[in-house]
Length: 179
Image (cartoon, rainbow, N blue to C red):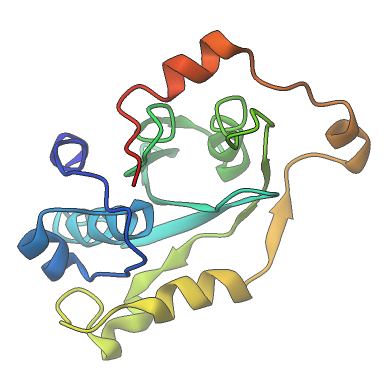
């Protein structure tokens, strides 16, 4: 599933395609990739879960999450190389969210990850046919914006964050797609 997402071009448009339309258009943004992965995980017998990584002075990132043998993993589409797949080795969602912390940055090289949401089971949107609709699924993105998020770092920690070094930035931007 991650390999399939990695092969798709990153969608730079402002869209919210359903999994059906991701298959049809053969492109996906991070939101679309997470929703697609959640649908694929559902077909494999997992609950269709996503969670939101909330950033400051940057865009949020959405990933599909799954739990196996008591540990969390993630499947994701990103325009940055390090914000994608995570093996299911994380005991808590906080641990999983923190695994994205060091490589989550804006184009000013500032570390921007600040919070994460609890899992959202996309089955709650089954009545809206989120997997197969031809219409945009903005209702999922809106829900992610409305739900509470848990802080990852304190304000004191935030004040002392360093910027990423140029070498790390170059590595993370391998394959980065621009408009």
